[in-house]
Image 1: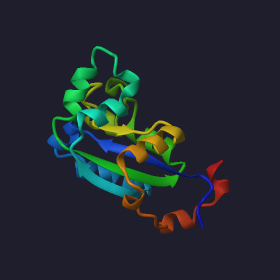
Image 2: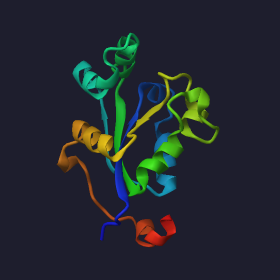
Image 3: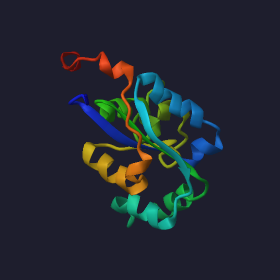
Length: 158
């Protein structure tokens, strides 16, 4: 039975994390929280996909640097699922501006700048749905129930 607060989010582990051998550490943070990894792959992003994903900043003067950065190496892309996953993931990841991120968050511990901020995480259910569809085919997402989710009751989420 699917929990009513179950959510999915897209995570992109960016080129700086790959270059610094942080992929396993980043994945483990989501797993330790109890989130389920239901999709996982490594891809080399095309210019067109980067333009689509970052359409909201495509006209900004710094976009060419982001595009060059995001296409410089492969990235690891995941779909993560869990109860209230989007809020939980945003806490684990920390603010986009890495200098504002607290220690203990992924960006607080590892990010070097606003551009080199280690990960992307969906910021809402709507963006998660759109982003997951952009990067994953339906058959690439595996559904299963984690035992940890079975024992969580909705009254605990208040």
